[in-house]
Amino acid sequence: SQQGEEDPQALSIQEGENATMNCSYKTSINNLQWYRQNSGRGLVHLILIRSNEREKHSGRLRVTLDTSKKSSSLLITASRAADTASYFCATSPYSGAGSYQLTFGKGTKLSVIP
Amino acid sequence: SQTIHQWPATLVQPVGSPLSLECTVEGTSNPNLYWYRQAAGRGLQLLFYSVGIGQISSEVPQNLSASRPQDRQFILSSKKLLLSDSGFYLCAWRGGSQGVKTFFGQGTRLTVV
Image (cartoon, rainbow over all chains, first blue to last red; front, side):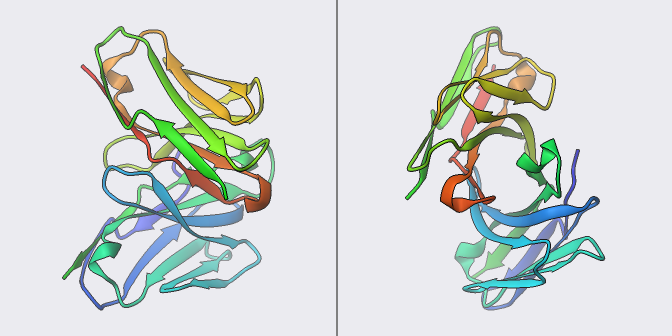
């Protein structure tokens, strides 16, 4: 079953603009991770944010987490054509046997137009 | 540093034929290992995970099986492929110095014809 739901499903922006993608989830989590997937390729790990963190930065990426709203956002600043990809959020539940697993949303397809 | 290798990259197999996809991890020991499947335009669905040699947990009943004959080797198999087994299969690992971060291989595009 899908835990994370990304929004929007597709996003098209001009190079240099910022891109914001959102993720909502349903159950308590231990951590949330964002991934990028170029067409037909594997997933690249971008950033992990733990349930006790509110914001993390990595280069041009900024991730926020609001556990009260069960939502996260990924901001890519000064986008480049090479950022064109699908972006997924994935959650790990707080405890139990399922804490070994990641549950993925369907992703946001980002197109950055040169 | 840790790396994950998954092969083959693409595979076309006839219905009813067997399947064996292999995944190996280097640079860490006793990782958690995972097999995911991605349908077109969708997120990833967990198929199997393993926390140790010979320990396999199945998440979705299906025509596939998994094995972990060695600490850093994870194999996805089928005795007889179905058309519905077509998809993009991804191996992943987690553990060691990377903690809870999960890292993925490059995937195998399987087409059953």
